[in-house]
Length: 464
Ligand code: GDG
Image (cartoon, rainbow, N blue to C red; front, side, top):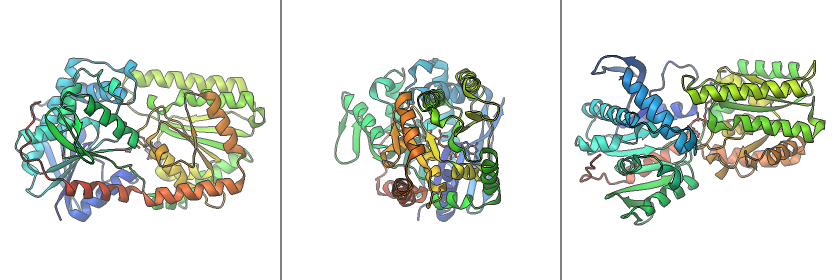
């Protein structure tokens, strides 16, 4: 079996007591095959030649590099978070097309390639993660790397019209085509990828899953990411999860909890969620006093203006709804701007009558799957899910909503709060079966199997 090399912008810290499903699945694959995990360790340096540190973690070597302060600003805060993240989430209005950002992005992708290359062995299989590293295969190929290189995009692939707005879209896509395999989250992402490729002068889709453009050829397929459903369900039996359930029962009594768990990111549709909850309370007064929205908005990218603006907007909407509808002994929205442990999140999901997952755009959305995994199968809560989350393609038995339509989202919340037990059980059984069958291990194995099938493109040497 070939050695697996995983490359991601950040390397998950093995000392983290409660890593997410992705870190667990990757660690498992790395430990099984023996492996190397390469990425940024989180440190910023002023040194021109950032050092590389190596440490051993079971059968896995963890190699971390530093970022120069100027690259952290232009690559990470700049091109990744002010260009690719907003554009790929259809927020062209938030994108800042500063050419210096792209120079930093190229520099860091080159730095990663130069530092990774000497660590590689001949029969390695390389798996690169996410939008931070679109150029990595092209940079590695330019240095003579011959190993198979796969790429998985965790966020949505944007429609042609949005992607074409990025001044460097051609070089980005040419670099993407240097991967042997490109994995996307949903069929809609694949349709967007296909429409971009076919719009190029030399673009064509040759045979099943193979695409050619910019003089390059790659294989592109859909691999919807899953969670470790069993492990997340098991968390609900742990003391911290049970403590949360007891606290919720005591604090909210007979009230029904509607729960949202998100990073405080503009892709997650948080202001729209408050508008929908307000609409529910206005048009269905029977839910006043009887339903409470518990919203975790965990801190994220707080140094960026767009995130500070979102926080301000969201917190003023929470304040306004509580002021307008709250009573001395009931507040409609309980909002927490903190990071909870995964066990606490599992307990919170278990306590909820409704899981509200309403992003405006999302590659997959793991919270939707975690909510299903955490339910009591004999008395499950109902998932209200945005059509614009990749998860909607798999989770058709959820109540699917357009998050921009407050009225329709409120109606679905009302339907969820009133749904008879038999229908809740029926929907939950189907959803649970799907997330158990298509879990994170299934995702990992399918991707690596497809990558194994690829012939490494020895002659590929793109100019970037
Ligand atoms: C990207 C894509 C894709 C949230 N708050 C806390 C916390 N979380 C955990 C959730 C979940 C994870 O973070 C968030 O995952 P999502 O999938 O919902 O969203 P992104 O972070 O945007 O992830 C997304 C994903 O990559 C995987 O491919 O699904 O579309 O955008 O696991 O539970 N965890 C803890 N405390 C919190 O307060 N411990």
